Length: 293
View 1: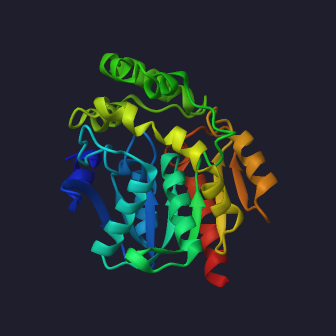
View 2: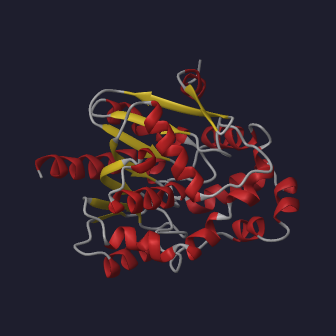
């Protein structure tokens, strides 16, 4: 059995709004909620999973519409719903507080969870956050630079573009956002395509990409969550990412008090896959300081 097959075999299922959600929950210690990006899945965390689970109880699901989870169509996909899903999973596992490690689309989900945690409400099983570490993602809509294919998929021709998209085009698009010296392997691209194609996943891509408009619509709330955070935050960013690289970090430093940022030179949009050791060093250093505090 390959590591990819073993990942799926080791997962469990959460029933959420009458849909099956794939998740992994491994390790012991403080709970770490790992929230993946678009258009991939929790499999993104596999290079750093053993090191994380040696220190934390790590919980990671494939969000609805992605990975091995259900991909209902039609469905009202939204960041708010994905945050509800994370809270439902936490309740299922008896978790009421957690640290967060997030990437890409998952950053925005984490911003919504952070906004809820900042509000201090315990109603409806709200999850209390203890710290958040963000990897490359669109924390600010004004610095997000979506790829042309994302704009097409999010537009009126989205369903047609999704239907006509190919594995070759997908591989080309993914490679373009990795660092020039750290491209994805053919095996990784095969795995990511398999996750995308599960349950005819291409057809839900246009609906999922509604998150770009959501980021603009909820900017005050989600950027405010960063500005008003009362818990430790860190950004670990692949600096040459064309979507949310060094230019996003520069904006973070402008807006967030006492910004804690780490830039990984030569690394693109998927730092946990391109430079897992660098991400681990930055993340574990952050948590050593959090623990001392």
